[in-house]
Length: 433
Image (cartoon, rainbow, N blue to C red; front, side, top):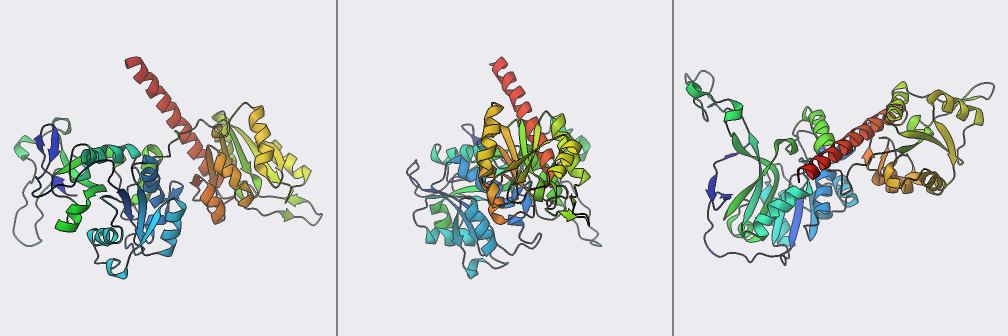
């Protein structure tokens, strides 16, 4: 992390005054978000599209950028076909970077300069780091206002750290280490120390002129935007992944619509609750295998007050006796739907005086796409086809019949608790106002 020394002038923090002419600021400037996503990641191969908390890593920052409605264009710069495909499915445009800026030695600045040469209409570029999955639209909005309303040339994200730093010394050098930012004789308590501001790497807003003429992402009249620690998470190695996933589930941005309080869930038996296989006995009796982790997931939802309905398809029907056994064992109604499940389920939703935002849906194939799109929360197992994955709001790490239902149930429970917490906070805010 780079640590900063703050200088205050009229309530705004900046580092250095810019010399020379200034670009005109205002809403007429073309603002572009640019996420750099090279295919040759060394720490975690193709980490930019690895699934984190249900969606590809890059999808988190793309969602925040698109939903912010700040940008005239949102881009992903890549040299990899799969990353390009994922970025397009998330609503981004593609800057197919050249071989010259795709080397291990290439810098972010090299790629951004190439992007600007190819896109002369861009006046302000926001370089967003793909590995910052807790980014929210309000972060981008408040940071951009420093440029468009207060005349800054560059703005970048920082986070406050309370780390005591010491001088590094080489082995056998005979040197002694020394403190860099504290006095050991007067070691402060955490609550008595403001800490230091360090670059988070989450995003960098920069005027085009600064990049082209001075080769800088941070310069001229420069300000920082402080991001609270809970929103600051970075991923460099595999060991970071579980930590980042838990942070995202709690602090990530899940879209314009707040987390829904799910009251009804539909789940396909074949391919979701089971692996999709039907076993036939010698006598012709049909059997299926259901994982106890998934049945525990159903019980989790039922305890949360969610009605769970299991679905079979008329295209691949279950024997009536088998459906009755599954229903009795799991305490769920089993319903057979046709080629257009949405048409059959719409009536059930209305009968319960609910809307689709109150519904969770777990499907696994092309016929489920409509339901996956309209449901407030939707998911597919990890082995679902691409078409279904693109429609789902959550992609499980587990395949069908091997814990996917349990994983989605825990996700629903977390979203319900987040919604409840937000509702309580809104009540507190209303009371205090």
